[in-house]
Length: 166
Image 1 (spheres, rainbow, N blue to C red):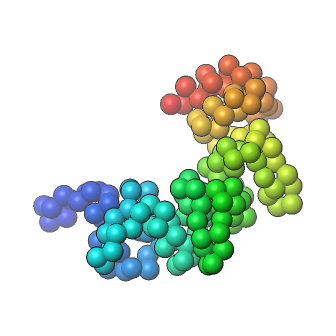
Image 2 (image 1 turned 60 degrees about the horizontal axis):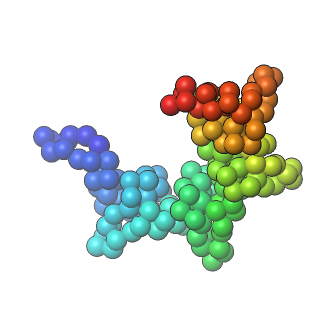
């Protein structure tokens, strides 16, 4: 958000204004979804519908795939995608997207680039990319711990790392 001409605008209002100017601005659709959705051109859009709109515009937008997964998945280009499939799609586009690795772990893992990953391996991958990913530390703790950056962490140490970051 911000102020323009003395008028304050929320983040949501900024994205709505951006979409009034350019209804094909996929980043504004994604961010509007993140802010809970809104009404564009007289039509209300839910969070999920905003992510779907972003993907209709740019089917290679990894962030929108991840966010669609967080909403339970959806139909893109006539094909239904589950939460897990959305995270896999995001990782096919950007294999270094730590949030998608974390979320894939939450869905039990999956095969990325021909290699299968367990829940624990997904969390480890997220932490290899971003060692300050507090959710990945927490979930790694739930898996009993693991080795990050060559250092072994117990379940308790993982939880403490998550708390230290938060």
